[in-house]
Amino acid sequence: MDAFYASVEQRDDPQLRGKPVIVAWQGSRSVVCAASYEARAFGVRSAMPAVRAERLCPGGTFVPPDFVRYRAVSQSVREIFKRHTDLIEPLSLDEAYLDVTENKTGLLTATLVARTIREQIRQELNLTASAGVATNKFLAKLASDWRKPDGLFVVQPDDIDAFLLPLPVGRLPGVGKVTGEKLAKRGIQTVGDLRGIELPSLEADFGSYGVRLYDLSRGVDRSEVIPDRPTKSISVEDTFEHDVPLAETKVMIRRLAEKLWSASRKESRIARTVVLKLKTSEFKILTRSHTSSSPPSSCEELTDIALALRERVDLGPKQRFRLVGVGLSKFREPEDPPSQPDLFE
Image (cartoon, rainbow, N blue to C red; front, side, top):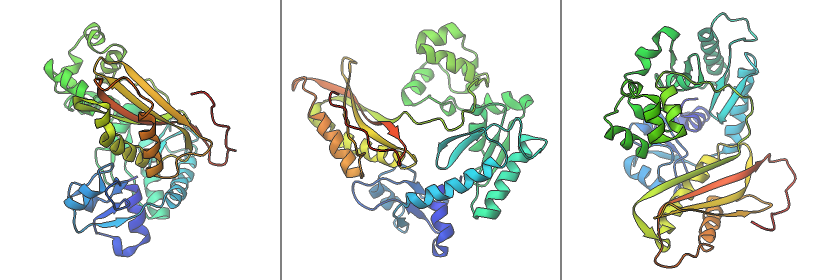
């Protein structure tokens, strides 16, 4: 779906159409949940601090998120998907993989299925969606971003190399800043450059992920579309520019908790456990967790729990840390009865 939360707001309030819309609570501790394409023109992006979005787009309209409404619209989109296939793997409220190798409507090609689904979403929900069509999930995901918004892009089997090899290596899933820098030191800038590296060399540098890089550079992805895969955990983390003492991690924990809260709003299920992760300057990983019968009800509560977990770390004032992360786990359905808190954790 294109700028999903913001598009729903613009659809339901005609006064917002054509204007920069930022879905977020205003305030120093809030982050952007979604931005309309008009707001994105000013540089506003999801997960950005709301105060920064306000500076970039002073004329933008801030709208508090309404996740109950977004979930209802998401379910309507899912019902359209179900007309065509039962093999639907949702990634969030606004994105999903569909396996249409065999489809219910008898359409002859996956491209026709994608075109029909997009048209049904437009006609019935007055929203737009972009689709990517390819022989596997990895390529389809890349293709879905190719002509946003309101676009359709098809990667035919014979065109995989022409599409894939010129792409920056950073477009591959899992290639973040650190991996990208490591590849750049080897002179690897594009997927084509990566394909020229032998598998043993990639394994030596990246371990098991080297195998994944080797496959992706060849357009290979063997993962299947798994319907209704339950979320086990979600987390966010960041590395400090310089190793810092525990006392100086507070600002980063707050920022990560806000980012995590925004990401968790896309989940229909709720999490019972908050996890704090720290990596020392010696690369030792520490985790502290808290499980409750009732999940965090606000970003502020999530932040407070994460900061309280920090107090359970005692390695002395001289210890330095290079990374911090905040996560949520032990997801359950909202209608499930509350579980008894874990006594020993």
